Image (cartoon, rainbow, N blue to C red; front, side, top):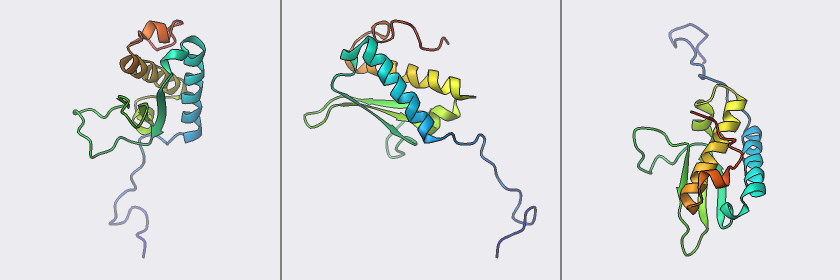
Length: 130
């Protein structure tokens, strides 16, 4: 038997913000990759970029939840950048900010992995200003 609303079960908990569609997030990542490929294709050479919903809880993180992780190449795989969709969405009030944060995150992770400067990867300075 289900408890009726406002009974002993208490009020229903609501999500802080509705989850945006994963299609929108994929679109943001795809557009970012296309923009970077236009300006600095060498930054994307030998790097796989992927999306996961949330970070793996078995990895040790600092007190903050990461937005992405960059992994160096190994003998059997390319370098990787993995963006974490839910942490990025939760830090942004709207779609415009999600687009900006996805772009900034990918550019910064690519710079870290490749040693190519952020200004070379993003010569038009699309990244948001903090």
